[in-house]
Image (cartoon, rainbow, N blue to C red; front, side, top):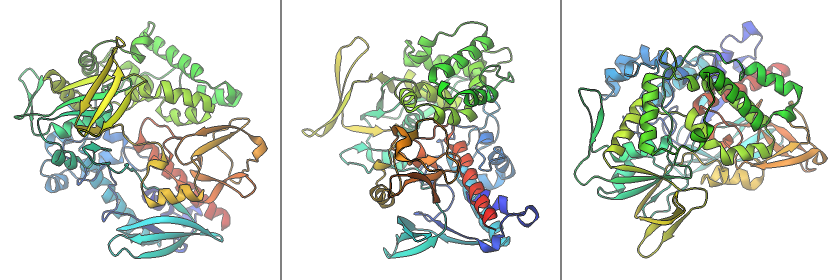
Length: 562
């Protein structure tokens, strides 16, 4: 947000933008360091935890997604100096020639820290008054006439103080439920917590089969060694008394593997088609319509029909499926070694948010219930090197994957203290698996009510934020600034669990004393806090787009006021 706001203001006078000398920016952060956040902090992750997205798509400037890749190329020597484990192989494309760089997450953290400090220096140089408050946690917001009062706790002194603002951006990032203790971990982070508290020789249950679950495996198998043979095959040499693992999820789906992108342009499923659907009749935008577009696109690209049953509910064993995914990524399934389905899907990613927001609540619930796992399996793909490691672990007998189905239970047993998964296998036979250690690796929870922070609790308790989205009789993806919804125009409600926002501005929606609902004039929210409403193939790119909208909205407001 700060980087993009400063970037928009630096040429302000020439473009008739607001005068930076009239603006004060305050940044509050619980940690000492500004920038890396939780998932890219070298105190949270380990060197082998790499970005799943391509570096060329992770830049934090909206109009320049390649900014991160360019920054790495310009700072290779400094990175090697700061991170001794940063080797040459991290600064070239991977060995499958996908043209995609996957760097350690700590490198992304260093980039974010550097860009933040650059924005602070540039902002102050052009006249912005910028105040940074490390080790400070905002615990509540209060409307005070036309301004917002922030109640803040100094985490070192435990003293409380207040600040005022005309605009507030809630960008608190990830959160985790507090560990319940007794060997149940609500999150795989910080990684060293797992290594220090789960002894070798244990059989561990991991909840989830997606990217976070794979990173959990890499953490807890890091005492062993991955060895590549002369033929290029990767194997795993476990340490003495190795841990073993069972990955559990409802569908047992593993992420697909990143391959080479092709040049083919979509003919059916593209922005023009979607915009035409929305302009003709928003009521006609359904999952079935979108599926038919996708099916037509893939059939046209491949020249034959698609076996959707195998896509949605694959029947092969997990190791066999993963081997096929990896082979497809390495060799491609198109004429030039590209992955055709990936090429098709990648062109739709910038449409996902818009399509999802324009679905009726019942259609969105249907997607969440039945298709979100399949979507993210194909959209949030894993780097080939991680897939190779996972396959090596499975071939070594270290890891197995179990599909729980929709009806399962996880019960804590007190005597002895352990956890029991009760489910039915593919033949319908009831199974009861018991573990002393369980790691929840399902990723970010959508429900703000699971955020243990004082700020989240107070925002929900006071009603400043709402976690149920209410739709007018005629669906629209967004509201015009200042738009009002009366109670008689409301027909549908969707309890998303996340903060309800106007997606065009990212202003939170608020309810007045008379029951009318309007976008807030002062409070915005981005990131994980809106994840139940905003769906994107890339969380990183989504936050860049969201903060760009917030910066634009603030500047537009100041320009109108001037």
